[in-house]
Length: 326
Image (spheres, rainbow, N blue to C red):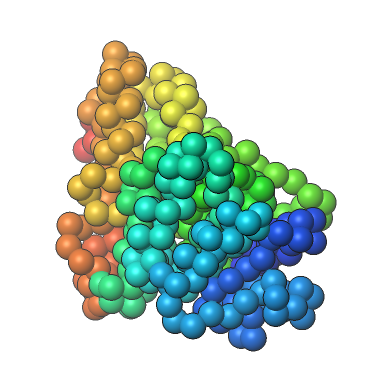
């Protein structure tokens, strides 16, 4: 099987869907002439032309609104944000229009739109360019939220998102665009709302998603050398969430650690913690551990940034804690 980069998997997904369906188009800052801020749309302007690969002014509210409006006349736009930090300028269009128009129109207007771009930290970018927004958007009924961790999942899930009739938030990472992985030549889809077991184990369940999942894998491999086998679950989709896969894993391991790159208050880990203790409390042999960033704006200093961001050592420490090991 061929090996391609994350950005190439994204580009292939968009291009394949645009060839398949003429109502699909891409719009955002620098997506056309510059081939995308992270080269995720490289070559698409040449193939599809300026009517379907559209450079916009620096106006997230404006082009988000244009995208939402265009769904009402039969289009299926892909709206790229250079970073989801900039999506805050257009969040009124995302929350108050795309997520609610189906219900407010009595089902007359579905909103098949994908908002995609990088989320969370990406090195020394400062506090205003390093925020994770998964839990923000997952809090809104009507939106689907997807956060892939590798090229294979990214392509299959993005194709499914483009075909979906509901608005979807598709979150990537600036630090993942160069990641390489196996991606089949032929077409494939990954269903929205289905998590994946990236590593099987019987001792502890670790749940994570997105780029921080790499730290969970590193920790699991290190713990395996000491005879501790962790089951690592990649959520892939935040909303709808595959609770059943989490429940079945915890019933087997009886212990749960959740790793998430977000602030500790009111996040995805908090939701999972509640659902597990509410539904399968009797299967737990230890309190649930959740690992998050420090509860501060993202620091710029690389020394402070290292302390702020969760890592594999934090995961190992939490696994030892739920196993009552020193």
